[in-house]
Structures are given as C-alpha cells and as structure tokens.
Image (cartoon, rainbow, N blue to C red; front, side, top):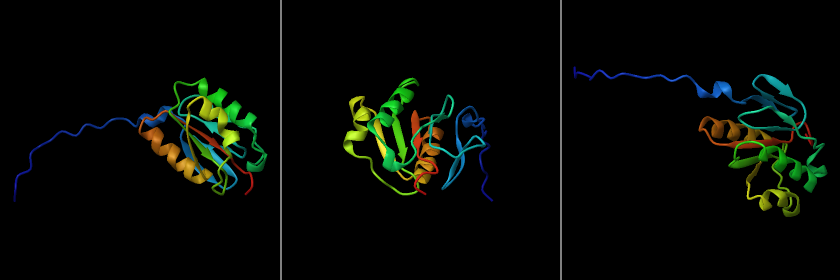
Length: 139
C-alpha cells in the first residue's frame, strides 16, 4: 500500500452567516434568511430586505427603476443587479431600464427563480450583487 503524506486540513467558518441569503422560493414567495416575503423585494448581501412596490411586470415604469437605482446606490458599489421578472422570463424595455444604463449599473434579466439561485451563487463568491425580484405577480 502506498504511503500518503500527512496534510493539514484547515476549515473556515461559512462567511455567508452574516449575509442576506435566499433560503427558499416559490411562485408566490421568496424567503430570505428564513423570513418569507409575498411581495416584490430588493435584496443585497448586507442591509435590510426592502419592499419594491411593483404590482406586476406590466405595471413597471421608469420610476420603479429610478427607485431601484436609489436603493442600490446607498450600498457599497453594487457590481451587478439581477432582475427577476416573475414566473416567466420577460425583458423590460430600454426606456424603463435607462436609469440603470445612465448610472452604468450592470444588469441581468432572468425569471425570479433563476435570479434567486444566481444571487446566492454570486453572494457565496463574495460578489457585490443586488436582486430586484418580482414576487407573487403575474403568476
């Protein structure tokens, strides 16, 4: 039998304990750190989960995206904004997302379930990401 060298294994505590992590989701809710939300939200790794007052994808306006820019601008240098468009993948028009383009905020659109999964992966990598999730709308 070959001899294996003895190596030390150093374990680190999970750094996600101090972050906002999406712990569950469905068509009509998103759960962040065990707290369920049945309305659209904005979530970032640090800070509170915020309500995003968007009743449906069809009701989105430029003002909703201006509000979003204000919220994420308060945090430390968001690299990427994930937009969860609800149960279906839908793309907001260019005039709606103009506030993001004007502020040079990287923006990615996907359905809300994919946005939840992607958000968690990026947070685990230490990325400065925010997610604006349409929840319980147009289900």
